[in-house]
Image 1 (cartoon, rainbow, N blue to C red):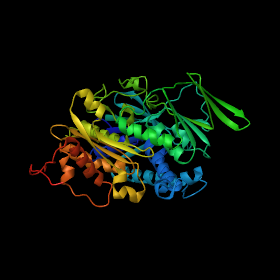
Image 2 (cartoon, helix red, strand yellow):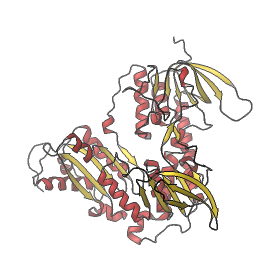
Image 3 (spheres, rainbow, N blue to C red):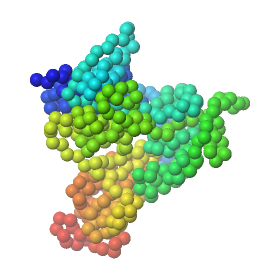
Image 4 (cartoon, helix red, strand yellow):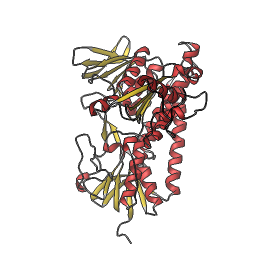
Length: 484
């Protein structure tokens, strides 16, 4: 019998914490979860992934964006879209997801504490009641293994006068009372780009500022160039290679606005500003020195391949350990950490983790980029398919989408797939499966896809790649030429 109250205690109830707790419970361990908010789900459900992606879907529907290719740029489902219209759908989905998550944890007999946790020693945590009802109570709990899954919070420069209305973080943006006529986004990371494209689709004049000269350097350059083109077509002004020196609230004849000063001497005046220069690990309240674990200057934790920190029985998973900071990868990290903690073998392939960027249009990718292959000296060729070539693309009104296959020049083994356009984050899983068994692009030549579907892009792109080589495709199963 363990001398500790719990076999595992998880701090944080986001995707990483949920998966770690449930996996440990499935292994018949006694598990507790600590969540400092009054509702569970973490940033993912309450202020991040779920709200922003639901907001995006509401924007796509109400703005008529998907049908503009068929009915013209002026087409819209609702002429005057308000924040209330957008939040209605979001609130419904958030409530549902919170309920589902709580039910899953309860069904697996995970004890849930609504409390703020801080370490007393490497195995003991003090819990301060975080629910605002009556006097606060404290208790101490012990655990043989601890998982830190506290996620992140928006990075706030102390010199920026945040007021939650005109100058706001990504968490504040969802609480806007009305749509601004103009919005400036400072920081062109994933969050910044997603919100910039979302508000631009609503007709808001958007300016995107970033000190880097290229958007999202981990994404294939051709895909990013395509996104930048679409952003500019949607009246987004890109100020790349520019650094913000200061921001100030101002009032003039046009109302309350924001003036942004750039290091180059330029100024941008805007109705509202989103400050999105990254996120900081939510670890400041944990009293980590008492645990023996330390953070970097952004509050993030370093871990090994098993997600162990410097203290072997303390694990860290999810956004708090940094890139890629995706809900999907966080869930997998939580599962792997819980399995390792109890000596259960579990396998994962981080190289095949897909990435989804829910900009408008959306982007998804898996595998390696052209830049990575060039730097590694790997010979490759590409095959492309444009949505406008595919019947389904015409049916849904997306004539701008692109699917790109990258394959080895000699073996034809698939090396990476990069997609921009409607359904990209769903389409990418087909190639993820092929990458998992080192399949050649002839796999797509030999596969029959439903017609009409966007999945046909794979066959079209495979033929394009083979034609670029001037070769006859080989049947991957029989090693015989295929009739084109």
